[in-house]
Length: 173
View (cartoon, one colour):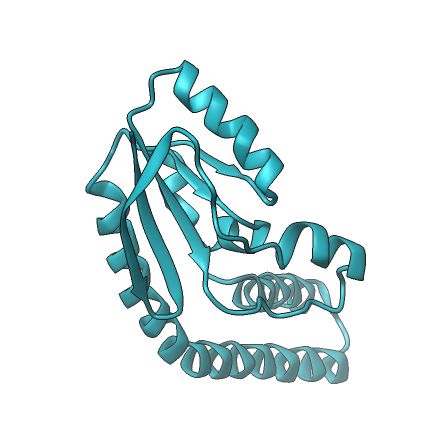
């Protein structure tokens, strides 16, 4: 359930409790109308967004199955935007953001020291959408930070493009 639908649900419950305690009939009618309005808004949003959810679920399942092919391979993301798109795979394996080549170099050293034989890179292959609530500085530093990885110790084995995303597998040289 998305935040919007959850909010409609909570407001409806609150209004129902208010109806029970309200003594004046005219106010009760207004509250009943608000409940009906909330229910219709909830139904509208669920129906409107169900197509989007089906589309997202399809690709989510594809990526989860790809990530599960290498259960012991950590996942590196080249931006915060990429990291947030993966959702529940955080529960199954570690994920890190390396938003600049310098950070990748540091992470690569740590992976090598820990004898990590391979890792995956997940990246959105287009310019991420700009959120009005994010400063330009944050957007440039954490969201729109794609780069081509240059590795000293690992080499790229696969580079798949699926629905605007790239999923790469890197193995130790």
